[in-house]
Length: 381
Ligand SMILES: [Zn+2]
Image (cartoon, rainbow, N blue to C red; front, side):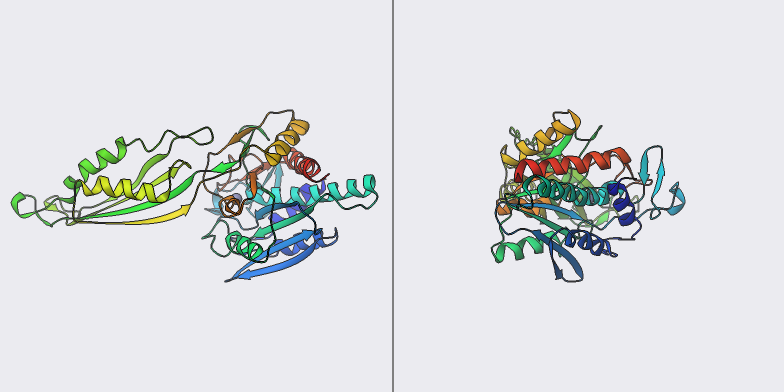
């Protein structure tokens, strides 16, 4: 059995439901300490984060990831217990197998392989730079006391990260076919239209907020927000909920709530989005409330040292020309990139993440470890 598989299984046995780490980081810390890393615990709120570093010179290359997992869902629907890692048909089944304990194990063994090679070829010489680990257990939850706080603290004391690989599962059909070099921004809007409730038979006595919404909805859904650019697809607008009505067939409701989301490119700022939508609503209504929640700004790692190192590593290990993508949801990369760090997300196939019977290919675990190791070589040797 490969060491990466063994370590993955050990991590998967720990019930680290977000934001509980359940001892995963202790296991990682032990492993890293034995290989010359200095471990530092950073606690914010009730979240324990781990910062580990080997070496003091620049550039600083960091592996980032999370030990927490999402809830299992109905246990009876799992073919094997979600916290008892089970091997079947070349796959390892357990909650967190693909997102992202397999990646964490692969990062550890990649470092081991790299350090072994360093000792062999350079007779104990240090690498051309340092390796860090930024590990949190607050990624799948609110993500307020994890990566965002650690990166702030590191920046405040002058620890500058140059390159970062996040272990999120990014592969699509086969391992290595896709990595993320950026993510779109995400903003939620909450619109409440206020009218006047009354009997449907007395239109002169009511103001129907659903009718008021009709032209607003039409204009919002027709709008072209931008055309995207070479890195991002066009910004998309989606409504996730409309709520109104009292349940009675003869009552015009007094108010309506609309919830929507935009996944936006770096052609737009949250401010532009807010003012354009406010303008559209203003045209049709003067009795509304509009509030916002920004979940992440867009970021992009443009072609450079890290994209080259990753493309070369994937080509060497798998023979594939990987696709540099900006699709998908948000990740902790959004907290790291704004500090001028080149960030790429690279991990196993993501088709079972957050699902019943989450799994990862056993072969892919070793391939991932080897790919991470080659990235380290490409950057630090
Ligand atoms: Zn994840």
